[in-house]
Amino acid sequence: MNSSVTSVSPSPPADTSSVTASKPSAWKRIKRDKWMLLMMLPGLLVFILFKYVPMFGLVAAFQNYKSYLGFFHSHWVGWKNFQIFFNDPSFFQLLRNTVIFGVYKMIFVFPLPIIVALMLNEVQVNWYKRLTQTFIYIPHFISWVVVASLTVTFFASDNGVVNRMMGTNINFLANPSTFRPEIILQQIWKETGWGTIIYLAALSGIDPQLYEAAEIDGAGRWKQMWHVTLPGIRGTVATLFILGMGSFLNMGFEQFLLMLNPLNRSVGDIYDTFVYEVGINQGKLSYTTAVGLFKSVASLILVAISNKVVKVLGEEGLY
Image 1 (cartoon, one colour):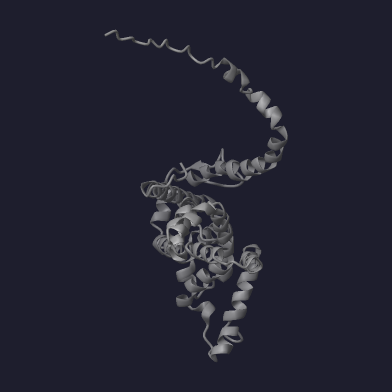
Image 2 (image 1 turned 60 degrees about the vertical axis):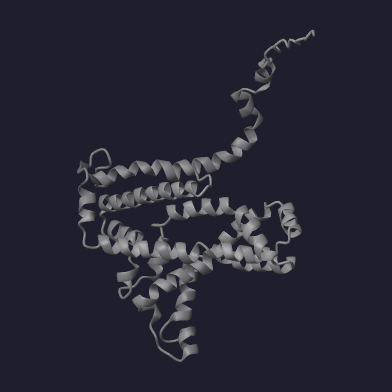
């Protein structure tokens, strides 16, 4: 029996010179996209000027900074400002208040836009859906001064709307036990619409064929939401969770400053208001720069931890 062996000659290596040659150089790409790059330039300059350049001022945290001496001639004190802050009797009070508000924000404020977006996603009447989106989105653009004025109108002790409806004379604005709920309710009313729009955009990117396949398999609306909708926005939820943890200690300076008074300061004083009172009003710039740097480092650590948690749960994370 004769057996024939077919020999296959190796194919010559693919010529990649044409591919390499077709790839435009960096200069050609810049010329091609010059108008887009010019449109990006103002935003980039603003970001550099107001985000990166001021970071040079962090050196004041390690100095006894005097404005008339400047950064280059102020006396270097090393870690002294941090030691003073950690030994300050108000350190643990500020930490406790800030962390409590951060926890409240992640428990009550963070999930609400997801719930509202899921509810609006089920609405079939388009005009009603758009109208609701508009109404809940508008408060995001209202100043905290207006929000604080509305709060005073509703919760004032003498002629507030709530007290007149209840027939009482409760001083909600000066009561430490009601201060935290007021702050959280303000944030819910003002920021829920903004987060809802983001999640609705993510929901619009889910392939409709997934819902059709689930419906063919006999899945109802609840199962479709659980097995199609929620997995479809997991990436968005994970990203906003990481960003939320990054702002865990940044509660909003204007809101707290407008709502604080001597009677509720024990539960409402946070790092941002402390920096304003001590740094601006008392002129201790180096000391409060150290406080701000401590808060920034703590926020960076929270971002790293939350990013790691998100990756463990199977999502991509930020890096």
